[in-house]
Each structure stands twice: as C-alpha cells, then as structure tokens.
Length: 374
Image 1 (cartoon, one colour):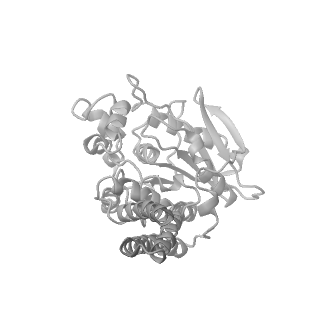
Image 2 (tube, helix red, strand yellow; image 1 turned 90 degrees about the horizontal axis):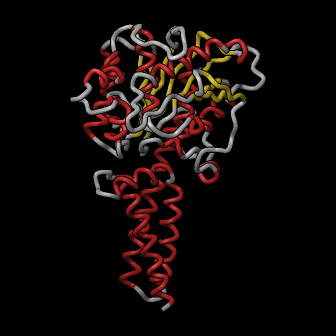
Image 3 (cartoon, rainbow, N blue to C red; image 1 turned 30 degrees about the vertical axis):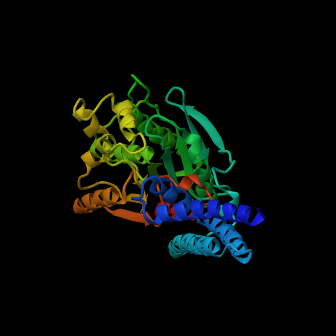
C-alpha cells in the first residue's frame, strides 16, 4: 500500500509539472496552454521543485519494485524539471543581458505585490487619487512617470502599481500611480478616462517643484489597458486632439511607455480573450459596428504619425491578449512614421508577468523601464 501511495503522489506531481511545462512551451494546447505560460513563466523554479519532488518519489517507487510505473514517472518528471529549469535559465540570461540585478530570493519571497506604501497620496480631478513614490535624498530634479493601471478599463486600481512605483523611486525615478474613471454597465468612459489621465499629467506638472521633478523628463505609461490609455493620451496630446478633465491641457510628455498595451480597442472586441470583448463594450458603450468613431478615438493606432515622442513597448512572447506579433506590428508602424521606438519581448512571459513581483520577467521589465526613463 505504501509504494502504491508513493506512486500515486508522484503521478500527481508528474501530471502537474508536466502539464504546466508542456503548456508553457506549447501555448496552443487547450487548457494547459492557458495556465502553463502563466505559472511556468512566472514561477519556473517552483514548477521545477514540483517536478523534482515527483522525480524523487518516482525513483523511490522504482526502488520499491514498481518498475514500469516508476520508469514512466522518472522520465516525465525529469523532462518537466529540466524544462522548467531551462525556462528560468533563458529568462535569467535575458535579464542579466539587460543589466538586471537579479534577486533570486525574491522569486520565492515576493510572489505578489509587495506591501509598500506611497510617500504621498493626494486627490486630483474630483475624487480621483494619485499615489506618489519619490526618490529619497535626491539633490537634483528627478525624472518621473505617470502610470495608469491595468484592468480592461473597468477594474483594478492604482494600488496594483505600488511595487513598480516604489522600485522606480528607490532607483531614482519618481512614479505617480493614478486613478482614472472606470467603466461600468451603462456608464462607458471612453470619453473620460483618457482625459483623466491627461489631467493626472497636468497635476503632476503643477506639483513638479514640490516633488522635485524634472518637467522636461516627464513620461506617461501604463500596463495593459493602462498602457493603451497612456499611448492614446500621449499621442493625442502631441497631435492636439484631446482635452483634460480638469482644466488646461498640459504639454505632451517627453516619452511614453506601454507594457503589454492595448493598441487597437476593436481587437479586444474581435478576439475576445479572457473577457476582452465585454471590457471593450463596457469602455465604449457598444460594438465596433455600433460606435466605430469611439473605437478609433480610443485606439493608439489611430494617432500614429511623424513627430511622436519616443516610445517603449514591452510584451511577453507568450502573451495571448497583447500578442507579441500585434505589439511588434505596432512598433513597425511607429518606425515607418519615423517615431523612435524601443521594443522588448520577454521570454516565456504571459500577460501581466509583473503581477508576480519577484519573478524574473518582472525584475527584467523593471530594469528595462528604468533604463528607458533614465
């Protein structure tokens, strides 16, 4: 009975590790191709430990006389463990090549957003709030970025950016994580959320002296929907095609950043990945056929033309929502218009890889952002 129990536990571990690694390498596989890239991409060493535990139990089952079963278990778990280690190795190689000071312990101790607080939280534009993360002891005025959170334009909040904000501030770049009005059934915000983000930039400029910020090195940026919001607002500021929800329109930012960004909101509706169609409908109030003008107005792609500011685009090579081929196509569109653009693709990373704060893709992406802003 004991050897059967050992073999059953080993089989479970082999199945879990094998499915996660297989899905990470082959995202087209149903179900495993959805969860595999997320867990293997963010926690490859955790998956490797699961595989290693299965391997040890498989070897024990083999030693206890379950020869055929034990051999199968040792092969599956060996391949899964090796596959997960290779993922970690490739991610580490890319991170080190980017100059990242990789903190290996954080992969196990920082698996979610860290419990940090902003230096200042203030209200702007009515009841919207901004969390301000400031470098400590800076003598000269510092560069800064105004950040919009992810969430399909209808969920999450600025608190999701606290890890990135604190890390940037600790490395000499101020970060201002802001709210914007979220959409809800019957209350689309396509004509308000971008204007709220413009207002956040204006509020940041108005407080630049108080926060010791360099107004010539202000950037706008965001993650996922927030990335699309940042690109849209920044480009429209440059072309003079957007207003602010709180008064005067500020000068455009010096640069803009889109992490796994929405570049065409109509694609959210068309592809319908993980509820993106519902998010697009909530944001715009309907479908592309009902409101083509709204979809054009909120899509960064619409406003690409010569003379835009330098742009940073970051996406994972396993991203199903902001697909790497879509982001690179957007980058080519910018290049064709003479816009300076930097595109970085993170190996074995799905959508929102920085949700796992200590993961290798998260550490790597923060270094990319810091280098761009500095």
